[in-house]
Length: 386
Image 1 (cartoon, rainbow, N blue to C red):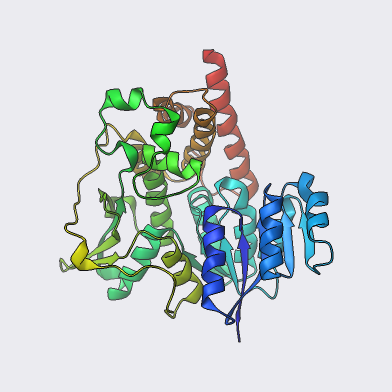
Image 2 (cartoon, one colour):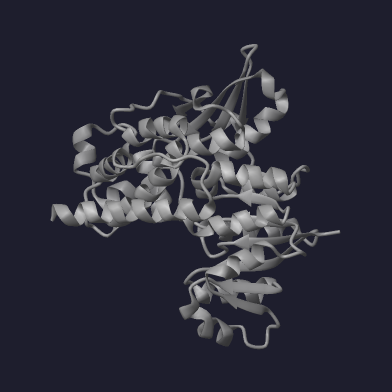
């Protein structure tokens, strides 16, 4: 029987690659549902090609346009914020691939967990914002959570080499982004174009800025803490500019197991979709004889303060990761709009964390309220400085 797949965020970079992977895998993998936010034209093109049973646009203003573009196709069209949750809970969906940037997809991921689905999580926010709630919900309803983030997918594969009590340390690798060798002065004068000039990966603007601040790695530390049940003290980060070793696991006997491959998101996407099996895919194979060398270095936590904050937040836990993530999203948006400097992104996050009283064991509604508060706090701080 074929695996039936729902892709949340099919118009984004991960979503588009997921559709390429599904197409290449053949008839054993069937795309039954897709969602997008504003890009109704691309959503309609994807629907015309793959003929999914369900198509959803979360921005309701695009509903009429989507209906017109899909007239006569037979796809059931959904709209609004609740549409993603409806698709994530579909009885016929075997796998839900969550690739929605930011906190917007959190409700849908929790809905999929409650429905006992296999959830391939590509975005960091569900585990960062609601790690405890999500993992508890998944355990209760026997849902399976598989990481699509390349670093966590790598660790997931490396952990197959030993038992959980034999793990000494998880080591996340980072490209270092465009500012790996930058001085404090370089960063203070960084433009939007400078920050978007990633040396390795072609990603959306938000995640590219997160790579420039190394906020992406800070979020991955929190994500790994929940996904693998490992304390922050047993997680490390190394800069690896070649982006060939996607992450490593050090075991208590001194052995280090690394997962290597070309820097292509199609591999972790496919691994999650075909797990526990491996299939021939569209990713280019690694040619070890052409690599030359692999380098590793410690990140400068005085330059990449977001990473330092991430370790602190992972240890504090509770509501602090919610504030950390939401403040970052708000600050990155302001930076991309040209309203703040690059260095102010981390400064605003730190200010927001300092004014927050950490709370524990929160419901989804409480988490979302704190998320909303943190965003407003960042915006108000910038407005008051004008």
